[in-house]
Image 1 (cartoon, each protein chain N blue to C red):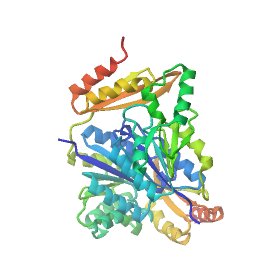
Image 2 (image 1 turned 90 degrees about the vertical axis):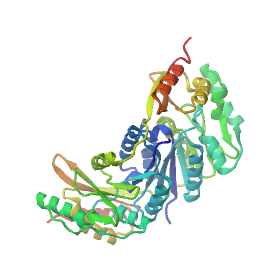
Image 3 (image 1 turned 120 degrees about the vertical axis):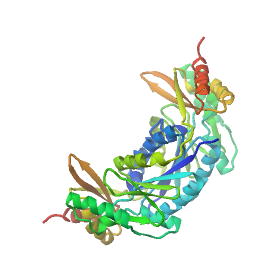
Image 4 (image 1 turned 90 degrees about the horizontal axis):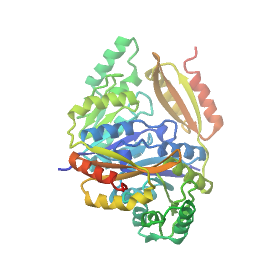
Length: 240
Length: 240
């Protein structure tokens, strides 16, 4: 049985302008691998209504789960919740359960729950809230789409609160073998091994460090014994 | 006149498995912004033939230029060149100009130009080579698609060799104002300014540091005087 699949949608002008280096993609990728969910595609789009709606619809029909990051704060450029509602064709407004969370938090911290902050309680009809232990304003899940914050600490906390509810697969096991030969010398025997172990994936990642060049050969698969057997064969390729 | 648009396609299992944190997206984003080219979308896909072909075709029809990174080395998982040829429906084989570059390089370094390394001379019909001053194996340009290496030093060198040939637009100018107020307090007056300066883009990026919380307001536009005028207004929002 093959593993569940996932895609990610990163939303934000700041990533595409080079102002901010995205951190959530790499984090999500690592978590999905641990859970045995195959992250198959990531898209990054700007704070543009049409682009977000199109990407949400493309990805939710193509993969088992979609995780979004960014665009759910209180400012005018935070349009993700409204775009997700539009993508599903459902109504969106301030919802009582979300606004109650915010009201309690702002009362406690002595700040005003003004109209801008209430935007963070806009939740599409039919969605369930995703807990935000960092800054309270919730994310939400609508069918197979999980809408989360862009701030890395909040994204990670939200992901931690949903992972127990996700159905994982067989976790991907990895072995990495460092070979101090040019990739071009490794390629032919490695390609033969990849054919022989067709249930595994073989990656070759060249390095050059202090005048030594070579490649890290990474073997990935869900069957530990097979990964181990392949790693022994790779390690033995250039032993005399 | 609006700026030229661009998209990026990052190819590689190692990014989606979380093994490697991509660096090329952030680098390209910064370079595009300097040149006045609007990077509108990034996609990351695995070393999967169908996924690569579909993404190349989607992006090349949607944007003025497409930049790819990854999958052009000598090993069996390097399939980008063949997929780009398939996306355009053109023939691909080892090409004399590319193999001559490799032959000279390997002769000089005393290594063998074997069959695996010759894979790096597979260039689609009609493409022009992109210079690789780091490790010689070339990238290529086919119509509006620029195919480059995934290793960051090589990606950056290839990009440097093509940027003089790209048509830029008005570079995006940026001003950043740090405001030590909650984003929710800033949101309403900022939204009004964003409406008033509708030719500019306003981003709000919250921070929390040593107990101080607030937001960096980033104003972007191509007209320096307008960006400056808006920055003064933002900075004055909470002066009494």
